[in-house]
Image (cartoon, rainbow, N blue to C red; front, side):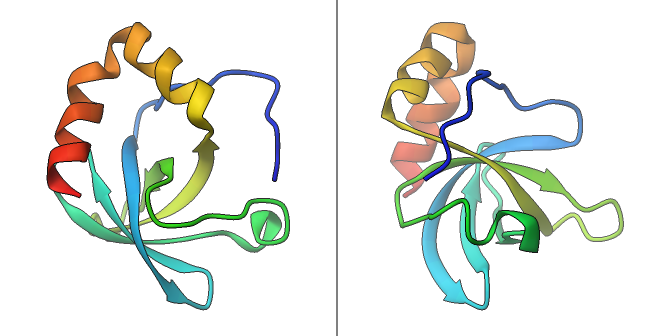
Amino acid sequence: MVHVSEFRVPGEGEVLGKVLEMLGDGRFRVICADGEIRVARLPGRLRKKLWLKAGDYVIVALWDFEKDKGDIVHKYDKRDVEELKRRGFAEAIENLERYA
């Protein structure tokens, strides 16, 4: 598991999401904070460094050419989810809990 020293929030073109299920071949079904269910892939550079399971919170970078797909670029651990709530993402996290 990768421990990222710098805390990160979703930027432009990125959305907070929660992993629903693993689809295989580095692909995951993710429910995003905007209510959309997307197929997100884990880029090859992160495959052996980042291990995901259902229920993990992630940042999905949306594809410009296909908005229903994206790349997983960051995984939050449990401490980070609490920090996200403090930084104004509490409503988004509650919605993700409700959806999933």
